[in-house]
Amino acid sequence: MNDLIVEAAAVITVDPEWKIHEPGYIAVKDGRISAIGPAAEGKDRPAVQRVQAPRAFLMPGLVNTHTHISMAAFRGACEDIPNRLTKVIFPLERDLVTRDLTYWSALYCLVEMARSGTTTFADMYYFEDEVAKATDKAGLRAILGETVLGHAAPDAPEAYGGIDYARRFIDEWKGHPRIAPCFAPHAPYTVDAHHLEKVAREAESFDVGIMMHVAEMDFEHEKFSKLDGTVLRYLDSIPDLLSPRLLAVHMLYLDEADIGLAARRGLRVAHCPASNAKSGRLICPASRLQAAGVPLGLATDGPLSGNGMDMQGVLNLYPKMQKVREGRRDIVTAREAVRTATLGGAEALGLGGEIGSLEIGKKADFILVDLDDFNIQPVYDWYSIIVYAMRPHNVVSTYVNGRPVVKDKRMTGFDQNEVFKRMNQIAGSCANYISQISL
Image (cartoon, rainbow, N blue to C red; front, top):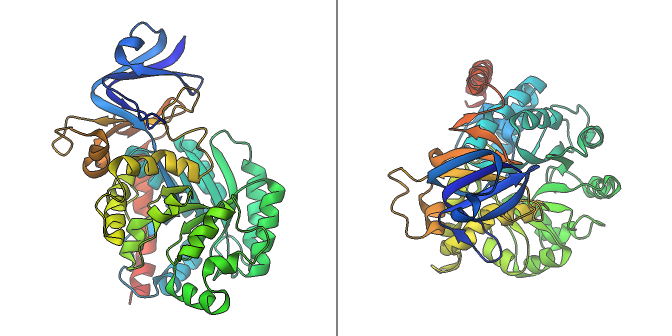
């Protein structure tokens, strides 16, 4: 007896054979996919619940490999300012970020992500245990990193206090069925070599991952190029840091030697095309990293950096920017882009064996997408529709472990209207500070 069977107009699997079942079905038992195939084969299978969606297609949930979701409270603040990170963001966080703001802002952002089809994400911020509580309430899957800085932070009054905070966070949340804690040193220019080595040792001791912004900033590139040739080669001088444990975010300032180094060390990469473009930065050599065998996923970045937290916008932009960078229309096909946003992201987070494609035995993380809308018809190629036509409002339902966390565009685990009211209250308390810092 299956717990759930969903029938849809099409099931896009992203499996090794690129199977598409039109129409198709998926069966779920104990949170995992128990069967999948043409709809006719699922008609006689028993199930506790059966969902029929003849005017929707079903695909793997989207995987967002880098966020700072509690920045939702500050979305749109102090835009178009040079040196925004040091002039605006660090002071703003220092003076305004609290446990309460972190929790409610995270929950607010999770509504946006879940309703647009994200089932798994990676996050790094302060008070990351509050982000974990919000994620657990929302029912999503996540890799969550406590931020480490070489100066005072909202949740650590002393420099590098984030290391001790991360230890406690990891002890509390390790072993959770959907949430994996890790260390998140902010960047090579905010965490010195001694403490990066310490984080690498701690991560090995706890057997958890590391996520860090790498080769993102022009001043970072200039500083480490003078010392070591490039940012990545500087990091390679730190024992055990460059390893399969590391999720390197951004990775803009790379040469061909760096790409080879990333592949040899087993790095995983989170590519943030929208937030990088918004900041006027370089285009990541994402297709070259993939060609070298580096696991790579897509990401929105935080709502203060990329603003929109839907993966559709990033997925739409990703192949276009790679085509511009390489001067080739065929450099990233729509099918390849869909894989990067799903299974590629799962592989970048070390979860490729569990999620990212619809295969028997994998976790039942999937979404239903409405076909009856003007932006999505006609359908000649499913992959091009997903990449270039699908928008957040087309997502009808979002399932994690076979459970609907979004059903008919509403969150199932809590009152999303209450979260909206809370965000309005938080924004009101932040407004005066933001107007002053903008001057």
